Image 1 (cartoon, rainbow, N blue to C red):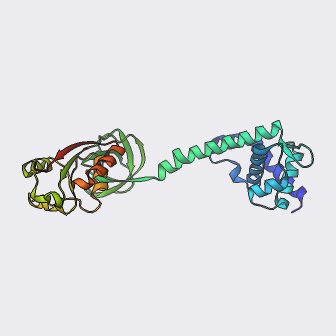
Image 2 (cartoon, rainbow, N blue to C red):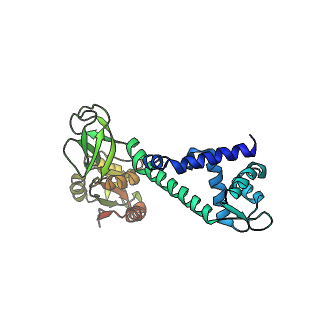
Image 3 (cartoon, helix red, strand yellow):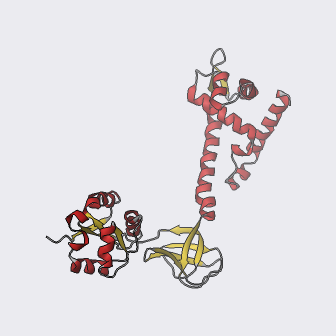
Length: 289
């Protein structure tokens, strides 16, 4: 294609933009991205704006990762359309018209990005919840936290979405177009410190206190063999053993009140994790004096 042919096509594209303002307003996806030539023009003008008035075609090409020949025709078109001017020996800067064109298209791109975030992604994002009751595709569903899990039901909640498929109660259900705030409160961690084997281990624990604390917890975690044995001595199998510290933090984030039984050598490290996560905790030193 000859440069003059491309310019005619460019001008035709510009005219279409000018003469079809209603299309632009009606279509949030209308941007320079629809036209590969306008994409190149936009990128070239951005680089000129960033570095003017001391940038040459060769430097623009290097910044865009292309050859100087591939952009020379675009630069010539922009010059002839009075979007840029030469500031001596091949150095370029934007004109007022060029700045206005660049700003107008930048605003369109901002609107397009906003459209993607608010409309497109909002619709395709699917949240997984437990069906609190039988739900049908298209139902409006209230989404809420209960016992550390996300539930969906027919009752109105502060967060509402749409059911994507027929689902029976107690099964996993997909929720889309979720809006509002899922209200829940974070839990509090009960931290039970016990001695390592060098200081008596499971033989040197206040079992009456351990039993009372464990009975009040939603889930129980053990860190170390001493902790596992101690829980076994009160007939309690820990819910978490491997990855216990991370699991307890997650459980508290989701509104549960977990109990963690750990040896004194990892006690301080865990408290730092809880504090960094800004979670509340209560300490129980179970070592027999």
